Image (cartoon, rainbow, N blue to C red; front, top):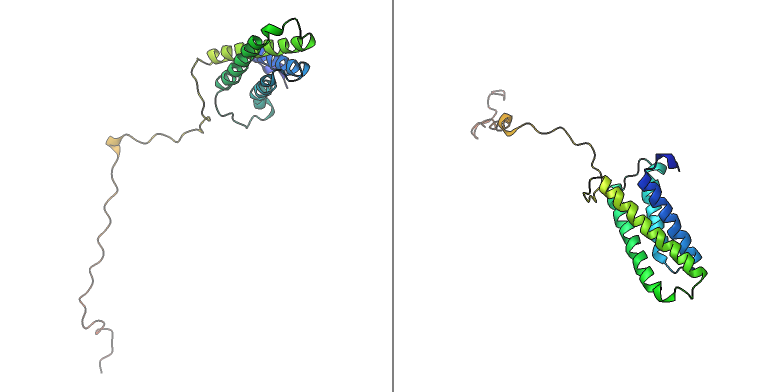
Length: 166
């Protein structure tokens, strides 16, 4: 893992992923989406470094937007569910709050990365270099028609020239 190769948005997403995972563990699984989205975000960010030949099924920004969006929505829903219990939870609340902050950070960083890529959603595998383009239709010449089969001799006294007379 080379953090120096990461952009500022990637670093922010890594921090968010770690916070989401730690927060879920500290709160004993109160936010299971934090673990799932945190691990998915770390894979999206670090897989190209660990295995350069592996191609992701979309652009980095598009994948981060999906995972970060899920993390952000999950964090907001968790926050809304926990509002009535703020004073009762103690340590669970701190862990949950870490998970919520981490999910929101992942969502924000993924949105920034997506916008930096041009804001175009792309979920397809990168294609291999294409073959050279075909020549224009005006220069295309169709292949010649197949040659006609050779004419056959009439049936009858075949091969009489080859047989010895006598």
